[in-house]
Length: 125
Image (cartoon, rainbow, N blue to C red):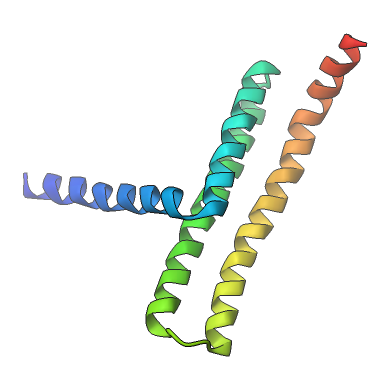
């Protein structure tokens, strides 16, 4: 029973981190909004399940890296309240990881949504 409580507490801490990041980080709010729109579009366009899995993977990757970016920024701010070149490198590299994942996600989105969206649009004309 004690292990179960520890597991529940661990999940609770993780959820608190997610909620904090969504509430306080503008970029995470943008990612959440974009993910919601993308998943609605996947449903509307009837994207095949295998392609939706790629979309979910992309969303999870961007969310995970945004959470890590928030953690790195908080840790760096705690360790180095004043500006420091190495603190800047840590923050910039962390933000860069999110950017790489976001660019990858856009590429996947173009490949997954492009053909069915084009087909839907040409049917309207």
